[in-house]
Amino acid sequence: MKFAPLVTGERAAAAMTHRLDFDVSDIPAGIAVNTAYTFNVAPLPLLKASYVVRRIHCYLSVPFAASADAAFNSTTLSLGDAGSATRWLSAVQINANGSPTLTTFPGAAENTIYTANSQIQIVLTPSPASKTLSSLNVGKFYVLFAIDYGADPARRQNPPFSGLGYT
Image 1 (cartoon, one colour):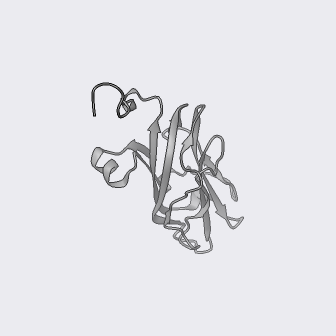
Image 2 (tube, helix red, strand yellow):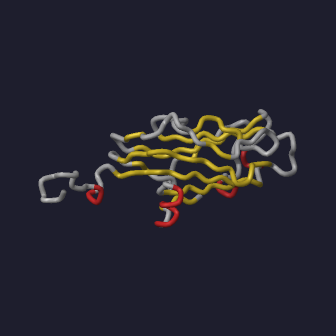
Image 3 (cartoon, one colour):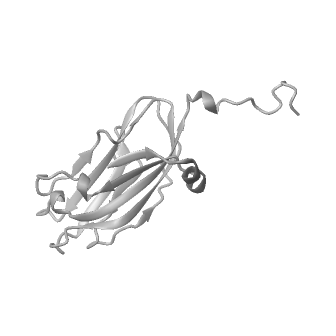
C-alpha cells in the first residue's frame, strides 16, 4: 500500500492532491473465513485537525479475484475514517466474479472538515461465508484524494481590494 502526494502536473490534470494505491499484496495471510478486514494504520494517513477532504475518486484497475475459485464472487470495499468507516465508499463491489464497479465518484461526503485527528480506513469484506480475503491473488485499486490544509499559511492571501493599493 502506498499513499503519496501527486506531482504538480498530476495535481493540475486531476484537480486532486494525493493518491492511495492498494493491491492484493497488501492483504495479510491468515485472515479467518467470512471475516472483514480493516486497514487503519500507516501508510494510510492520519487526517489532522483543520484538514479538508474536498472529494475522492476511486478507480478499480484490476478487479479482485481468487483465480482458482470462481465461487468467490463478492468482495466489497468501504472507505472512510475513524468517525465513519463508510464516509466515502460503502460496500462497493470490487470482485471480478461479481459485478465490479470500476469507477466510483461519491458526492455525498464532499468537503469533509476535520476538527480532530482521524485515521483513514479501508474495509474489505468477503462473501460467500466460506471465503477468506487471504485467498485473493489478483486485484488492484487506487483512490485519488483532494485534501486541503486549512491551517496552511501558504494559503493565506490578501483579499481583493484589501486597501493595499491594488485595484
